[in-house]
Amino acid sequence: MSRRTRGLAAWVLAFLIMGACSPVKHESNPTRTADRSPAASRPDQETGHPAAARSGGGNGSRPVAEDDAASDKEPDVIFVPTPQDVVDMMLHLARVKKEDLVYDLGCGDGRVVVTAAKRYGCKAVGYDIDPQRVKEARENVRSNRVEHLARIVRKDIFTLDLSKANVVFLYLLPDLNVKLIPQLEKLPPGSRIISHEFDMEGVHPDVVLKMDSPEDNDEHTVYLWTTPLKREPAGDKEKEASDPSEDDDDP
Image (tube, rainbow, N blue to C red):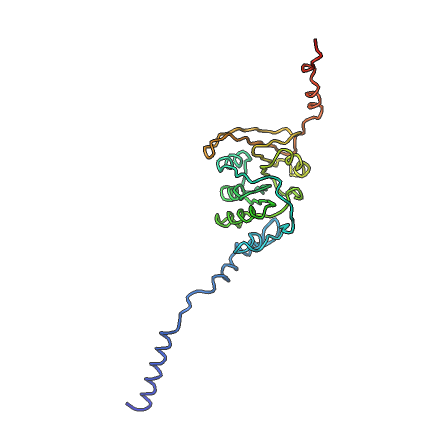
């Protein structure tokens, strides 16, 4: 074998060895691919923020743009989860549609928001002041893969502008429902307000529904109001308070 032939053979052998040892890159960086996905880059029609920012980022550490993260306000109520079958009934009673924008004030673990987005395909926003509940609710949104429709915001519900929503869910105490009336009166006509367990003094409900839940073996009451709210005349309560039939001085 000539020197030239031996040199060429050695070069070919070295090339083959290098090729066998070099790793083959089959796909691009998955993180960058995910960042370019339509769901991550598409702006929200309500806020204009990208979906990735709305959902708090991939690891949940980045706050949503609307968060009032500096607030040190304590929650007004303790968290008591609504049974899922009651959630289902509330959404049915509210006649939720795909084109609706649902707000859940005091969203807890986000089950109303997630169910509305997943079952009806509508946009839904949950608000809560408790950072632990916000964390749980965001994880619930992510695990159910409805980030493109649902988001969770840490904020004081009594500072919210509710005029963009047309379905509002409440699970608060009666005095807190009353405190929200000025905000609720700014909802568009025909909006639905649903409250679990507690009424709204001074406002006449359209529907009061009682149901037994097999999940907790308890009875639950659901209230429905539609806007414009039907205020009860103040004179009715004054008349009730001074009912002569209850006067002890009557003969």
